[in-house]
Amino acid sequence: MTDPTHPLLQTIDRRRADLIALCQALVRIPTLNPPGRCYREVCDMLAARLQPAGWTVTLIRATGAIGDSDAFPRWNLIARQDSGRAGDCVHFNSHHDVVEVGHGWTRDPFGAELDGDRIYGRGTCDMKGGLAASIIAAEAFIATTPDWRGSIEISATADEESGGYGGVAYLAERGHFAPDRVQHVIIPEPLHKDRICLGHRGVWWAEVETHGRIAHGSMPFLGDSAIRHMGAVLAEIEETLYPLLATRQTAMPVVPEGARQSTLNINSIHGGESEPPAGYSGLPAPCVADRCRIILDRRFLIEEAVDEVKAELRAVLERVKSRRSTFSYEIRDLFEVAPTMTDRDAPVVRSTAAAIERVLGKVADYVVSPGTYDQKHIDRIGRLKNCIAYGPGLLHLAHQPDEWVGVQDMVDSAKVMALVLDDLLGG
Ligand SMILES: [Zn+2]
Image (cartoon, rainbow, N blue to C red; front, side):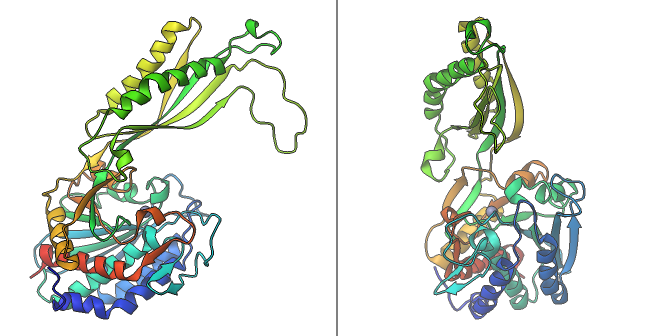
């Protein structure tokens, strides 16, 4: 149960104002992605805090990664503190980029205004509040535990919002998340202070194109409409694939609950003549569509294999083909990520669950994210399985207007993170 007299927890309570100020300072640097602004500034700001306090700080530009350019360089920071005593390394990884502001704000998106218990601004919840909490947790732990062992790393990485290729993927490819270097990873994404996120569903993006033959629109029988072919594909997806996906339920504790089944979104459809350029005021030309394309976003479960997921779509298209003599199609793979779920008795999970119980006086919830985040790179490239997402903030506020993070939530999750350090690296 809650033990407010623990010196580590008292230290974090005393650093509440520092935690607020750090979160505000991070939010006031508009690290917008796209295109990837102010990445160097945010890394420099963190380096200026951590380096004088004994952290070894490395700034790494993801040169040549997707998105990296001289105009918008992809800067990442890794800070490491070694105790000088043998032990594990606990790594906190936060992305420093934020998504566009969008419309509907009543607060200054980069003002980081403190109002009651809330700090408002783009990135407060996703996830500069979590980054600030992890830094305060590590600093408080080191200050109160002179005989700690092992090492602590804090990273602030680029481009999570656009796939993480200029951030965690780049670092993982260079061995920064290798299991002989890092043993425990916590990603302070806004899953809320009482929830441990074990992983995410899988994703497969694909483009399907149907082919036709162009002809004059007044004599469509002389051509072959790719749009009509695609209509047949969509009808087959509605009639057979959606009902099938609805029957696939997962044992993964995905939130929200609607995502506990396989899902499919049709992101876009384009067929026939392209949209006229802006300013064109004429009529369209009468043509039979010679091609039509859809982009599919298929999210799959740990119980499903990606090959089966792909074969299932191919089967849909083959059924349509068997009924339409001139039907032909192509499927192009765009992107895929395997589902991942850390074991509930992995050390970092057990330790975080115990800390949540101690700080909040309640049993931790275990969840899985419907979409992917940087854990995918740590799992697949880094081959590190002992990884979770845990941090302050309400997930539904991410990417919204008037995004905010609760100060008490940041304080509580900083306490949880500090107790995890105490458990894994305490003297
Ligand atoms: Zn995030």
